[in-house]
Length: 274
Image (cartoon, rainbow, N blue to C red; front, side, top):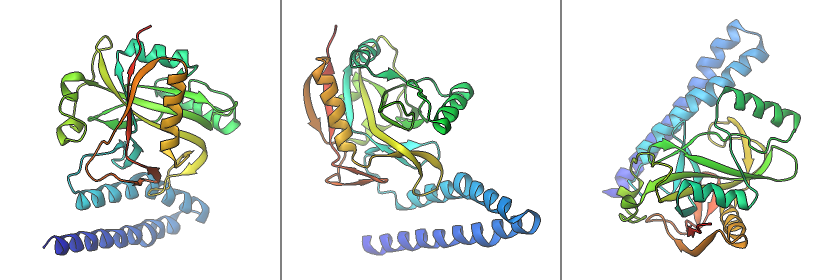
């Protein structure tokens, strides 16, 4: 019975894909091509497909295929799989900021119109922007609480970076491998000692997203290496202790999350009070 249900789900997703392509090519592009110059019609269709139609189609497909597993990755604003969760640190916001300041990492600016425009200029002109903002990813029902980055050279296109979401310690007792742990949670106060759940990746240049073809940073697929690099940075500056590994979900062996290669392990450590 399960195989029949699964086959039906896959056929629905396949049909959804065909319908989506048909709408983009034979409805929206055909309409735009009648009223606009060809090049503008292509640009209009791309924008509509990448930022409106495809994200919604992928979200519907993910809901059809949902197996009620514990999530091992963040979610984009479009509801798509984002960066894998691969790091967790115990401590206060003050300790977290002090730890990354000690290692020479910069806290990312808040994402707003000013910082976005500055980032666009830096990205296009290849000018340094050490506190460049991050796009918003979601975990526990909210965007990241704080993010840190370390530039690679002087280019804003290449950087090590990590986003963190604070989780109150009474929730941590529910264990990382239970659905309750990953449910919606309020943002903790900055003075609380919490678990900072992080998603770390390495930006390497310019790219288009795999499923929706939106413009974004290109990222190194090996998020295990980035997780290990960050832990090594923090350990070498003696700002963490008691480092260990923990599997976040039920079905994670070596596999892929979005376009990333991940072994599914989260490195967990305690921030050292200075």
